[in-house]
Length: 614
Image (tube, rainbow, N blue to C red; front, side, top):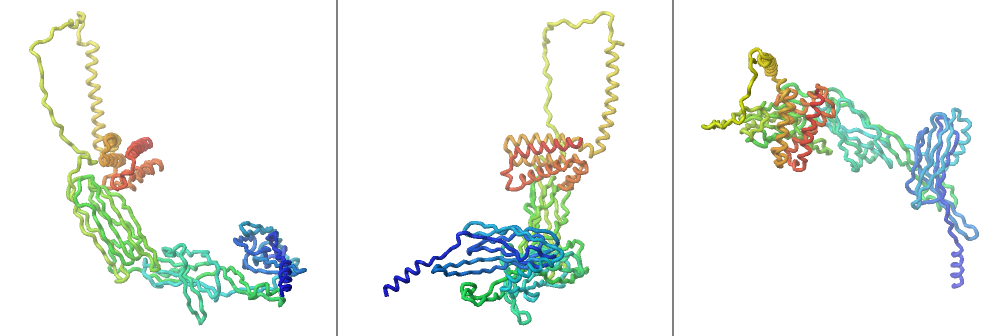
């Protein structure tokens, strides 16, 4: 018994498993000369296993019918007691030739053991007459006789568009869900073309990097795996029949195919199940749908209705009811709910004429879910009263069409009464003030000083009458009188033209305010500094371009500068300086703003505007 064991061990030691030392990665084609429209295959083979990150070349000039179709093969040899086995893997593409010409299919790449291998390129000649290449094609097809060609029908994979409401009101939110139905395996899908739907404002509800919702569904007794690959909220912008265009998707289906067996002993070392998978790429489209959009009812439609449709709430808040002149007030208006909230525009509010107002800061906080679009939209108005007194902001109205009630609903804010006290004397308007008078005392002397110099003597016979000095002094009053008349006429003309007067004094007033701002800068009086800088800039623009304070805004200033042909870069710099200054005055972030920088920018922008207006 021991002898048999020793013999078996010796026999096993003679068995050598030969592993290929050289890894070869090559490419071959079933035919290198094909006719236009003819199908052929290209195969990339590697003589070892464990390959990863296969990267195919570009098949420019050819249509890819399917691929990569993966397969494996193995061969076993026993020679003189030596046992050897080789395994190879291949990636096959089925192509269709296009136009005539000579095309080169570049190399493919694959990674084995951390090293990247490159296949050889292939040159394919496409000819008009394919008779010369028919024999080569048949030879290539004989090589693939051991593998059947796979396919699938439109009933195996298709897309349906599901609409939440096919008869909405104009502006009403509807949800469109694109569902992918499949009864075969899918290795990959990608949206090729998103429809452009005329008359519909769309908002994508699909979240990035989130797996689509999947479930099973039976249709005509056949089971499908359903994946909701895309969900969109749509808002009709016009009434009538609107078409929702199809969605195009590229899918790569994995179709099982049965491999023909050779019924030899070597089938034991091959695929034990005798089957493999073929990848087939195809473009599929969803169905197109028509929705019938109803117009909003005309009965009971308020004049201030701006197109909001859904279910909303409305609130407003005033930061202060009692302020001093030139202090800032914030009026915040918030609209919340579900519907076309993104399309709600700023409100038309009539503010007191003594208030400086700015365009509102609009903040959207939109939530996207399977149920559609919801969230809040905030309008933050900045108001600056310039004069003291009692002022009123009338109730603000928000009107929308309520889908649950089927009628228009108007929500109203309260009326705001604002008391403005006298400020610190830094208002932009010109104020007349009285000047304190001092007593003037004459101090004389009862004893005159002794004159140490003689009196001035004049030659005898010379008189002042008819002398040169006499005529000179006689002419000077006439000249001064004429000059005074000219000056007075100009002055009266200037006073009659208020806009011209303000224009002339604009630069001087701005410089005086900038000098005051410089003193506040040196004393580090932040609030006074920003107030003076803001008044210098806005007052300069109001006087220079004759814009009333009630109409002074970024838009009016921008339009006035453009009308004067001021350079666009200068306009943008001015708006940037104004924004920086205003936010430094009235927001908490002002501590981080460089006061010196704002002061220099204010001086620089006034100089630039003056130079360009000359």
